[in-house]
Image: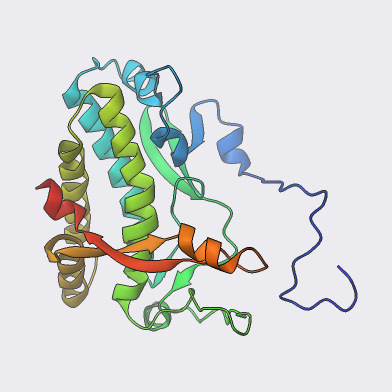
Length: 255
């Protein structure tokens, strides 16, 4: 970096690469597979091959709708168990398909690895209630704050948009196309699994009611807008700009 550069200046990137490192316990275990969840939500060109084919074969399951729905339920349970437990203590990552890596171990949905995060979205009162302190993020003057949130409902935005509308929705669409399953059946499986997790994770009664209301009872959800804000800014440093809108609640639509 030039000596006059500030904390908020971008480093020169004419020749650069990002090097990721993963835990040896995952990389060196022959029973474990790790894959970005985006790979589960991307149809292959001129092919209907999907990782679920291998998963079904490993478990000696026939390629039926019931078997695919069962594996999808296990995937959803693993994914939302991690995200909802993070939400409970006042934090969420950007759990879209590039950042969320599915950990598969001997035919089971084993865990979730979150990568490429320089920050987490947080709700400070819940962090402090669980013995943690605010990380004191430095936000560039004049740029929107997307890290700190004034209400739990605002933090939930990241679960509704990146985790569900971007990540899990693409997986649902791909499984529907690949295995000829109606989208609403997959949405119903996912919704049922989320409700079970909300019931069993140690949320306060008020938080549990809020989650059920925001996720399942509201007629609309927030939606994240990307293209027009990016065009409006026309490049420049800083995180990706975005706007907010509303969309029909997908769980009400699929019921």
